[in-house]
Length: 362
Image 1 (cartoon, rainbow, N blue to C red):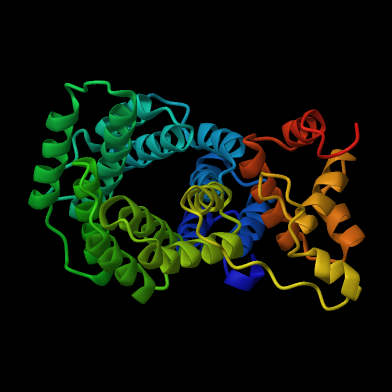
Image 2 (cartoon, helix red, strand yellow):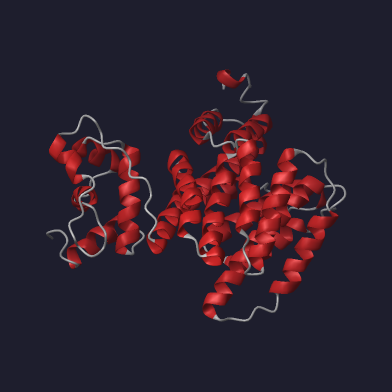
């Protein structure tokens, strides 16, 4: 806390704002350390709730949904939410919507997003309303894509989408660069909700966030741009650049869910992501195994086999890194690649699948 010049007992609300700002620009490790220090200072519950809410959003961005749930629960006040908690209610409900969205519970996400907008005036709370409309349109776009794949009709889709578009247009806020970036992203989400995702719209949104040094938002838009280039323009060449940018940023930040989606899109579209450079301390033979493929039919590289064998032994990422003379971040990339290639979501499942397929000894 001394680093930021705040007193734990009196400045928790300000600390929550500081955490939010650090999270927005991708300084997640700093935000996590700051929140740990504040929450460990035995501050009053009323003040700690600001920090828990900011931490919940951080954990959501990192893809740690169970931890986000714990912090979000602790952010709720003990009394019943009413008009005196108008802005807090909107923020809590929007975070519930994000949590449901990340967990794949799209109908719950839609319901929470609608509740977040309740009783907020587009004229009085313009900036907040614009952000909530962006989130709502993202949810509607995900629902539209889900329903298309399932061939399921959705009577609520068009009314929700048009309500959000109209509310977004009615929202008044100072035309700052962050507002314009949210509006550009919302416009791109609106096109995606119509199942006509526009690469140019996503490129404009990504550029707006890049100018603000908002790496998490930029990476998200770059990933959507890559999807649009593949779905609409059918261009792997045009998709490769934004996809690799999204992958690098997600890797840098430790954004697990975004990283997983980037790796999955690269696999499905057969776009090569940059391979992390071999560790110069490794032996030449070890470095050579980094890129050689063993012809297993799953595209698993020899270096990924090395990681898979250690993973099957129950080793942590740190232990694997020490054993193979590579960084823990590089190990994380290999683990994500392995989970994707083996079609599983957990480390133990990866080891079991590899054993079942005869890739490693039992």
